[in-house]
Length: 347
Image (cartoon, rainbow, N blue to C red; front, side, top):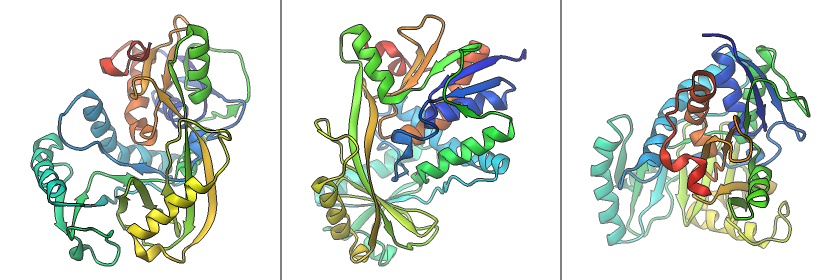
């Protein structure tokens, strides 16, 4: 394959992952971001790589499943190249079951997960008592335990990609002329530019607040999703809790009582967290395309260029496959993007 030049505008998780996929295929890559790597939503705390429920299967769920399955090899190679760990671990997830109706639904999903997840992961219903003290409080005494969910540290993931790219001679620069194929992975700012240029809502930033606690849960402990709160034990003696989803806000980067409520709900769900020290509070905007799916493909404003944006809540989980399909498109002209992910779905 002839060598290509590639310009990636944006050094969040989508931009860095696309740069890495293109560099691995031999492209000459430059990454441009005036704010540096992981400066926006990708610099958060939580790092929950959790699947959609295994039912009503569609292209979005299938794409995410493929990406979650690819993640181990993707992040192993990044670490082996650059020497920096992303904190990735496919440690699974626990969810409490509220009542008999939810229990019946969870058991039905355990059946549909068998063919949909292709035997590569499980969705099980089990007694919370079997999990031990880490189990979330569950009114039915039962929990969902899936083995597809994974966790990572967002900041460490970005740092790992930066280190791997540096080994290949690629640095993140604040500005440079475009060269070769160009992809815009510019997050909230990119969605705002699209909305302004087209005079319609193409997407927006949704505020999220999260917290980091000092808590040693253990390197293989599952994450928990309870009362709409993600509780993510990392492998460095910290635990992340998040997050809010705020469409209306005055201060996009300020934390407030909304985060206090999230922390309290986490402590109610997992009593072991009572007394754990909060060592950081974070708030930021996450890019949400109007369709809610990632926006991948031809850029609506820049003929001959591309866009990769809108990874709202699922950006880190989607990144390995987003990177591959965008590299396919830019370097080989091979388009495997699902219809619902194309920019037209949000226009």
